[in-house]
Length: 220
Image 1: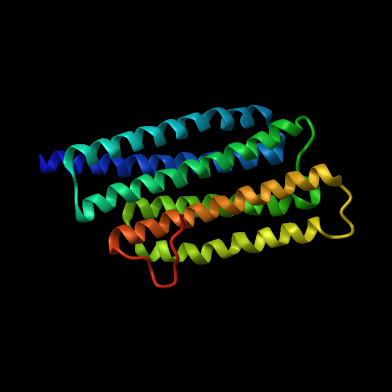
Image 2: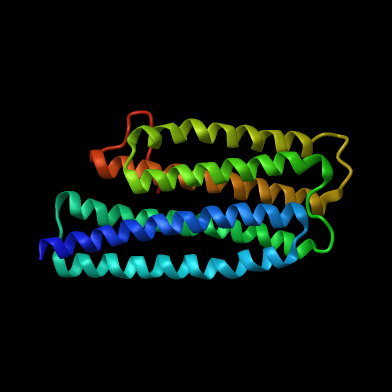
């Protein structure tokens, strides 16, 4: 019975890792669709978000079912509760990739991103992908050193976000309000995706240690 219980817990962790991999793919493909004006790829990212949503719902049902049947305590209960929260973070991260692809689709056949912002948006997409991959690694391995490092990795995303707004607020901006709104939304999607990845790593730290690292603050 105990072995079967832990197999169920392992399956939940495996689902979280798979969700992380799908979210990373969504973010990378969404960025590519946005910058290359690839409508077919944008449609794929939008459609694939259903799979991430379905996995989150299934994981939630499985975790609640295990809690009802097994009445876990201590570390096992912490694993299940933390997994529920991480799945919600991952699902939201997938939504951001979905939203990025929707902007690409909405502006097609025009390019949504002005030429002078292409490099910044590409960098934001690259950083988001790396942060998601690292958070997924943390879920899989419970690597606490990597979990803490994500706080620093997120600083690069914050820097790019500020860089984006510097360009948008410059007097030389000539692309109008509609494009400025699109860029503001894109910046928010990338920045919030990274925040949720950091939140996921914080939850892994809490899962292992039973407390948050001293320099970290848990998110709701």
